[in-house]
Image (cartoon, rainbow, N blue to C red; front, side, top):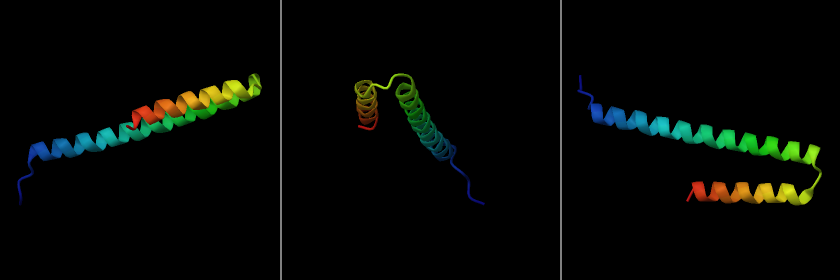
Length: 66
């Protein structure tokens, strides 16, 4: 029986939790963006507004992953 180091277990759990949180956040952001774009296209058929939203979202995501 090998003794499990609590520090390693905590780091592993924290890393896994962080990865899950990041994935969940990205999925939620993507879903929200898609919903917003669809709503904007349906309600306000203005190409410029949709492009602005897309550009803003891309810039924000790029900053997050730097």
